[in-house]
Image (cartoon, rainbow, N blue to C red; front, side, top):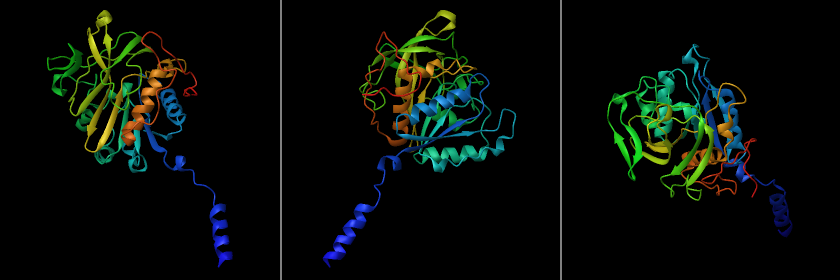
Length: 305
């Protein structure tokens, strides 16, 4: 009997250890494939590196047909993923795909919406509810209010007007309006963001929405002259959505510098983890920007601690 026990113990000890971290990685899909004004290929490559370099995510890029192609062929299996990151600015997804995506999110799937992805698919009401606010693509007062920060609170402005504006790319100061949310907790509450295309004058349903951060939009070049939302969350059924307007990628390989900003990379990583799991395990990094100094990670890698 003793010999049998020794044999069993030997067999147990000889079984290779299971990599628990690998099993728990967040299965992520990047939805992309069209965007007439942005270098979506380079932007998606940067997002993939940012997320995978944290060690928390595995990422697969799923592309739609090219602009003008047969969109009915776009049928990703959302059920394979914990998180869908949308970096897309093209034609509206086909009805079957829209219905499956709505089911995925309402059932608890996580979603991240990046920069110009608040522009397309204005004719998809549920997408407008998921993004909370949108820009251009025919949006006006019928889509919902403008939302901005004034006098210590958020204002829902139902005055008529078109949605969407941006001036020339510039540096900006990001201010966290909720410093206790898992995405922002522990980070410097005011920080300098590198050169980016800053959107303003967005409007939409703005339901089940919590704004995490804003930036001042100067009146120069037609700006609103108010504190505009830059990052927010939306609840949709059991699903959680993180939206960031940061992260412009221009139309050539040299123009994704906004994604090199440490502030963008950290808030994207934290927002992605939160959307997928409801929690953030990443600690505030030593190289996070301060109020007057931006920092960059050209290789999209977190700083070693």
